[in-house]
Length: 273
Image (cartoon, rainbow, N blue to C red):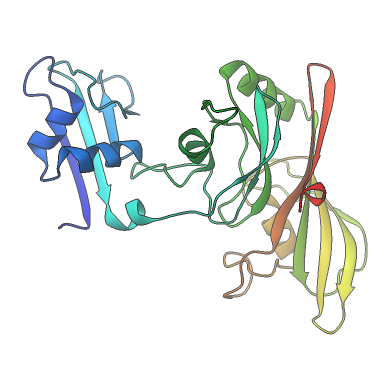
């Protein structure tokens, strides 16, 4: 069996189902294809001017001009992730502990290793499933608290709270070296403003490493990792901006505070772990 396969094909006739079209154009069984679809490997383009979107409903019917894209990768399909943990359920949104190795964004090859898809397919709130919408992200290598919206209205509200800075995000990081003071780093990232407030929690003289508290005002990609590395304090386990290591990235999102509908919500990882 081919380990990696990319295919593009159209329906043989108007009204053909997605699963029939896939079975006709691949060597996989319908049961296998249904499993692949649930993992996000199949995309549908219904108009040449529109971007393809994932399709999971096997019996969805196709128009003659519709185009299916099939992305098969054995390694990605076999990938598993540790289970996220529910911290707080606020009905319209929830707060989770995202373990390391869990993604916040899928790829064309699948999305079953993302936290939102895991929630939709593996977790029931009072015996019912809910849509799970990503409203902010943590790096794959970073663990900690993350907000998930359960409807478009609250996804918009949470996004607006982030944009208007009605949110507090605090992290802990274990870094190499002796960090001795409280510093605010404001070096731009990708030509965009970026602000990180860093203070010392504890210094281990024997290991020459410092446990830091970081509060960020912006959420640029790899912001904390870049700021600390540039300052000479790379996070332990950072394969991108530090030294090559077998240790996991020592960076955790430990506190979230957000104001929604004039209510301030506070969530701390220390209360649960």
